Length: 190
Image (cartoon, rainbow, N blue to C red):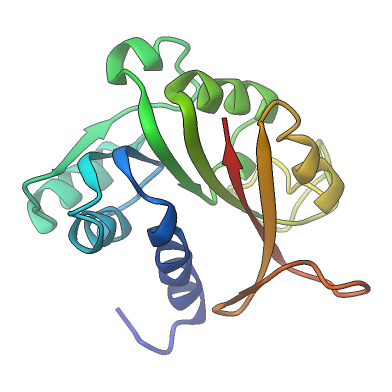
């Protein structure tokens, strides 16, 4: 991992950002190669009972299983669009999902999945890059769409509380009037 890779640093920063909110049984959905999941297991071990990293890519999960061990950590292959996911995984006190929703055709179904997987009073920490909006083309080849800030905020209407932050580089801040942010992160309570 190149320490000068800005995208990698930004992604690791999101896991650092999430640490104060991590508690109980934890799900990292679309965990990729697993380094962030392992980081949460290690840094939050006194606050969690279990953490599960799930990704649709079998090769990523196999890599994570070989590379990142922690006694509280399990990696599993899974698809966030699988309507049976709750039966397969049960429910969680905390869910993290970084840069996932832009890869999913039906972002509203994705949010319904998050709600069904989250225990009452649980916390969802979700981030996504911003773009032209739902259903509009994006320059990123694997993104279905990139939501606008307003569309992103609208995803959390069913949560009891939500705080929005915006990321520029490795820094997070509350929204500032007139600023453009490439990425948003929400901390939502069920």
